[in-house]
Length: 107
Length: 114
Image 1 (spheres, rainbow over the protein chains, first blue to last red):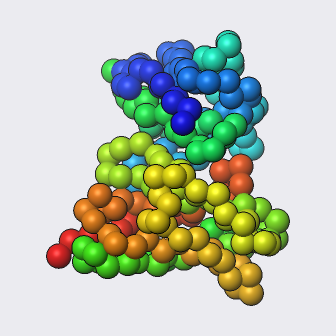
Image 2 (image 1 turned 135 degrees about the vertical axis):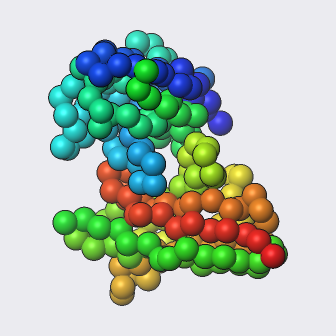
């Protein structure tokens, strides 16, 4: 199975900060990488697809990038509504696998 | 608008089975694979498997083969997942989601307890 190593597991940050979350794939997954946001008691929400494409309705302060096997989600100018857990997902190969999650919280 | 409406929470005894539903609306049900995802309390997400409603074709995470059975009812645009031989390890929230993971159900909390 493809392992998605996500870091950090916890990320304290201040409002207005720029933050980056990373997932490293254990094998080549091309751009078959999605990012999700999950708030307490809610279903995951698609934020980024194809590694770099913003999903519908997602604010432009979110962006995705790729460098080799490292995939990053960046949030510019953090807002309070961004505090959540973020997960990556590779869907290049079965079984689909998620990262372990990054909890973004107010410092 | 696209909606995936899942059945309610379930409390089941160890060794029993549970069947949950995911009713789709707002799109052509038979055109999109439906995936199921497990989230144990406070933990990450696990992909269980997927089903293509048009043909009934399935793909599974090996870990869940023998545990999960996926079916659909095209007449009601509903996908089902049955979990068998339940143990405490199966206590979790289970989500259905459409191909591309762009729409998700609200989740079903399954609690396995005697």
